[in-house]
Length: 595
Image 1 (cartoon, helix red, strand yellow):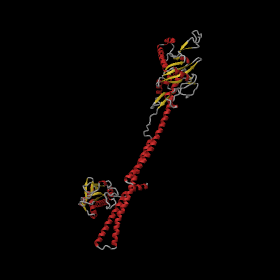
Image 2: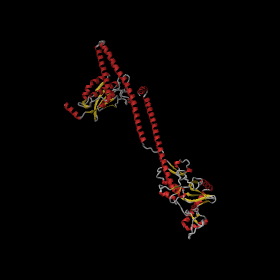
Image 3: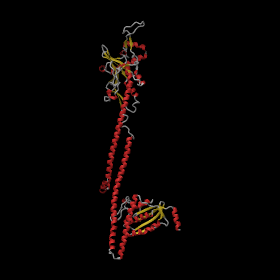
Image 4: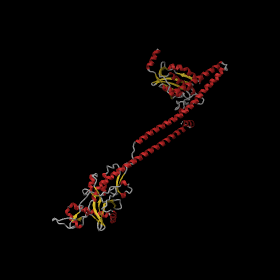
């Protein structure tokens, strides 16, 4: 770091330093931004995985609930005897009123399905190659007249069933019925549509945990007690060129002469609505679809139902997931603030180190130059005087005056350097005590006049009112005046008139002691750095000094509770030292003492 500071402090321009610091800052910010982006992406992936697992678990629970709801329906239809799929069937074991047995086939008994409507079941039907599509709910014309005794309502249901039978026959052609007959297992086999998800025990009972309002209602005319394992197989059959589907529960029944399909047409749109409503609360906030597997070939195994060849497709809650101010983001925000603060502090420290290096270089150069001239003068004149090589008395006096002037100048340089060091260390202790400004100016006037005479300028000192007292440190105020007059003596050439003017004014804020010259003044572009340490605004190579006078004077003024400012003036430069006025009790005491 020190090597970096030295290299850039010596070789780089101010613009180059700013570019270097900006490049470092941008590099650190880019790395930090990349790390923050990776952290947020990792958090988002973790949240996405968590949402996926939640959705998967919710889907499994919903599918289990749907299967439990449909199980009573499958059980009820599986337990239905084949005889009920005929409008009228012969019964064995019947007797007449005298108790005599009747021959089998002499008495035909109507099917319980005749004139019956069960929930979500549009039509019960059979199909075989010889007779085609028939329904136990639509008897043959020769037997239909015998149902008039069953009531008007049942007769209307028979008419409605006949329309449904005609619609089903039109929607599904014979080739599809043949395919279904070939693909449907025998009624004696235990089958569930979605595969072996549940044990195929010989006998099952509808779960008591299934929703009572829907599952028991779907069961319809279920046989009481235990029933055989569901033997129906669910099929979705596409009808027409669209994606419209018909849901059929089918089984294959065989006898010695023929085999036929026995099944029931389920109202799929209504069933799907009821099933989705039953799991709506379980999957709240998610997009849910219940579709046949044919329309969802990419469905995962955990999305497929066991009771139907259908898939429950559940969308995510929301994507991208709203992270908000999570713990990770709060930690990243704190880390970002720390990084920004560290960058700002590092940039400030780097510029401060460069500035300090430049100040040290300027200080060493200035002190060397300021000390070399008086020391050379001391060495030259001391040798001349010691060797008695100046015989003329007037020239001897001039040499002694030069030695005194150089000694004063050297003392002023040393005092400024020591004062600046004390202020920077914070060890300078300045008193804020009342003192009389007139006495201070009288004591300082000879030295100020002598400095003005050295450069051929007049000193115009306007004395303050008698008894005017201010708050501050008298020694510090004297040092500020000496520095301001010395500064005017250096820079006020050419000056018209050749005068350094010192005035004292009072106002509502306190006492203002101004030192003005009538030289070229301070260039506008130099005023910002005018009070900076080691700054020599407008100084030519012939002007001596360290550039500490104004900086030190302002620090001394502010340490006393006042200030030193550059005031606008028509010509030249005017510096105003503001001091606080002493309390009125001290002013009144002074006036009484003078009286």
